[in-house]
Image (cartoon, rainbow, N blue to C red; front, side, top):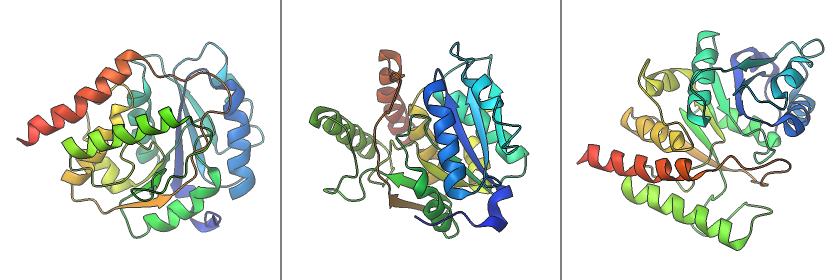
Length: 247
């Protein structure tokens, strides 16, 4: 909904963590640039050294789209570490706004303009699958998968001061100043998707203005989910740790 303003594009960075997303990442980047201009936001792909050549596919686009970057990570892998490293890179490069989104087309590129508009009056904007307690904007999910997600959000909201309908959404737009505070320099971060709960909690502690906007969540288009038992265990533990730290 709406295009990202031309004057602001140099200061907007989109961080996309990847592992084995070659089938999805190039079409996604092409769709973002089609909607928001070839000289639009800077796109930073944080790739966990994918054996399928994800990073190479992104780098092959640079001759036509110089605002597209790929950074191959060879240290500690995982969604949380990739996001934190990509966010820190964007801040160092002079970003005013930092967006995170998934590589698998789950997050709608057409929502980016609306997110930036909302971020002009907020410190963190969340692209929400659940814009209300009853309304859902999820597509291509089974009833069981949808209820599991709902329960995960209920769990997070019960244990932490999340205060949003979709605390586990990875589709977010941060003001760089707030994000810098949330990242906290050299502090450790969750390895997996618990990074989302962790950073939302830190944003609340920092007094950030948080806003949700509705965004269609379409589910993975191609490839395999990165979910594992270790990631699920961490996602259960982090809210408990937050709860205990508050007490």
